[in-house]
Image 1 (cartoon, rainbow, N blue to C red):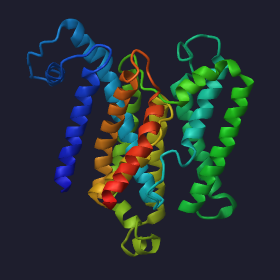
Image 2: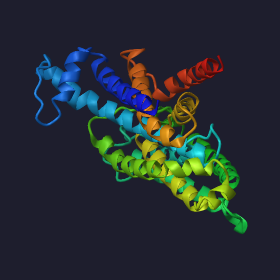
Image 3: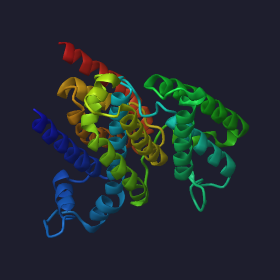
Image 4: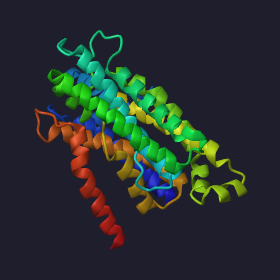
Length: 340
């Protein structure tokens, strides 16, 4: 069953990759797109039947965006699965420790400071992605410090409560900045609602190192997450250091989430729906959930982005709106089928 699910995950990624490139304002033949993608492999030369203009659309315009969607979706889903294991809560979210609020405040501050200059990301030493990353990491650090205030131990409960407090404080600060700079509201909301627009491979190259580090650390500890589910005392009896494993996983998942939101904005539901659905369908073991979350999370977000940019073409719906619109009904359908 696990091998079948892994095969299904790779098929989902392949389908999302081809569909995301083939469909758009200019529709391309899926077979030709698949052949052109295979041509990117050294030593492979297939006749795709695409014109030079269509090949440029595939490789220079759509492929970077779809790959970015695969990376962001994979990181959000993987981080969600890791958080759910660490906090022993199947509905834990990657933004649990204040990542979303910190990134939102950082971006709002930069946009407000540079409002009226046109493109807020152009020629800036401290642009939107950097501000989002710094704000997200800063929020996690504040949550981490607050979780041990008064000399108490950092437990899942204290970290969650600290995350709620930090998120509320940073959200209030963001609201204050927005009210003081109402002329920048449109740019702020455009980022907050999420987007995967990219002019090339720049954003992909920014995210890739963080995705690699997060993936290696979290996947290497997938067995330890299974042990953590039985409780700290039992985990210690089995030779595991629960707190050390928990800290490492939280740091890695938070780093990946911060990198994801820095280039995509705040995209919700991916980190909840994908891991929790896989837990219901493929079983409770994190040895299966984590690698499957990478595959299906990436495919889910890439296909969601396809819907966002085609359903109201030539206009584009913010991807965060689409994930929110489809997230809850999809989750309800899965639950109903499982009960049936």
